[in-house]
Image (cartoon, rainbow, N blue to C red; front, side, top):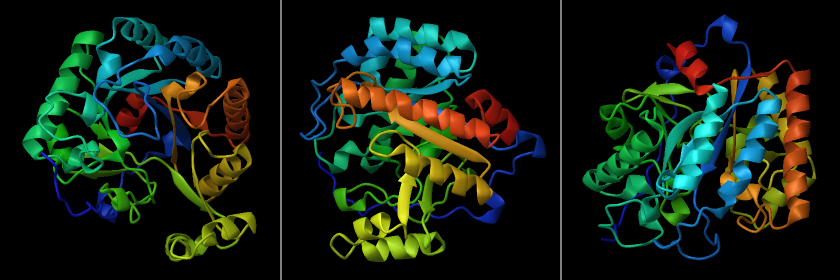
Length: 332
């Protein structure tokens, strides 16, 4: 089954949908990890790509975060959730009482396999709701069996949320979705369009939506979304804007995002009143050779140094770590 779909455009949050944080919440940050199998990012996705060898580096990486007082929100997909060695590693991770297991749906490696492999179908929200629900159920059951607790937070692989996703999750006991990458647009590949969505968490269809933080920086950042979109139709214009210090779009991740840019984005976000900053990375980046972001030992050293510098910057701004449990409690 190959679908022909119109890109799903997520509407901006209304004022009455936004989460109102209590004053005691302060300004906080959380780190999400897409805990997943390894595959060639330059090739089409394949069902047989289920290797999880990079998980051998996860325990050491978790210790680095734990030593900084930071828990990890581990968004685990089906190949990892059904691999005994990976399960053992993650069981020890959540013993820190700060980390938590969530669900991440990679549709192409999660049964049932009733759809054709295609770029459009790799976004789970593009699948018929019955099939999307069946895959969510398969993943949820695997995680519940592996960790003896049903996951409360969900992420669609490739940020592939669809019009039925939030309702399907709410019906199955989920409380939070983290599938939106604020201010990004994947519609050219058949994915969703998040250009209208900002960073602030909001409630919709029975769920708390927690977008991944994206910040416009530079002298023209107030023109943000409109200018960035307009520059996208002119070859190299976005690069010129970034190099000239006029406008950059910065996601809070060490993957292909220089630390100087990310620190500036954090400072801007905090100054503009963002109360919750959401960071993310992919677990295969913890071992060289599995992602375009960490190709060798030198890249891995840069990756770890990025986090050390970022945590020092956050401390300097008085921004502290928060767990999924604390977010849910503060959101009421």
